[in-house]
Length: 256
Image (cartoon, rainbow, N blue to C red; front, top):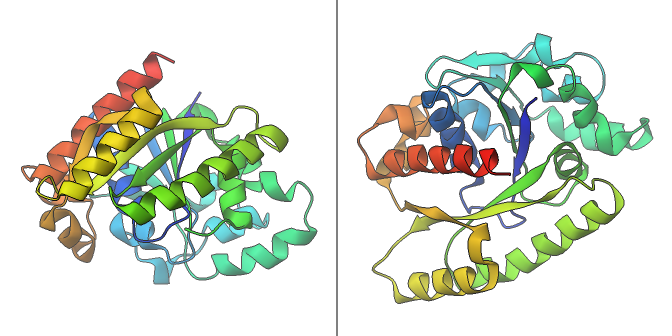
């Protein structure tokens, strides 16, 4: 039975998609069976996995509105060796269409039940806003991975996200919990980064992952080649960090 995790943060530009794609690739290297669900209409995770979002015949949109299923819509990332439920701009229309559908918050959960036994991990890349799409991700997941930069504004956004997770846990998904906080785009030369990192460890304790993802040019370059950074330059510090994060995830889940 797959462990389903949302990669979420209500603040944009914090490395959610980079984390989702590279964690998927890192877990695949560790021989885990992985499905990446792109729940963002921008389709960046789809492109980052090497799949052309302009040529999709079926996508997350069709799955959510009941016109297709995960088995039909999924594709394989040749570069990363994991499966992808891809998305494109059409997904933005699902927000409106799902309002009148039955079990609208649980459309994704119901769809993933079909392939639950086929994967070890299902990773959901959520859009930055708290929308019907993000709510579907949170209702489908066992837990949330929160990537965040160690800067002042990130702390402010974190409190909003924690409150959202508490509300979803109380009202819609009692399995949902915070799996951990991942420090990304970390620059040890900045005093503020070190201060915020220390604050996170103080407030969240062992909920903060030991692995820290450094600021890394090769990770930023990889999507333009349609590859996860882990596969684009396996020797880079960013790739090594995401592989280490994958190993930490496997270890943490086996201890749960």
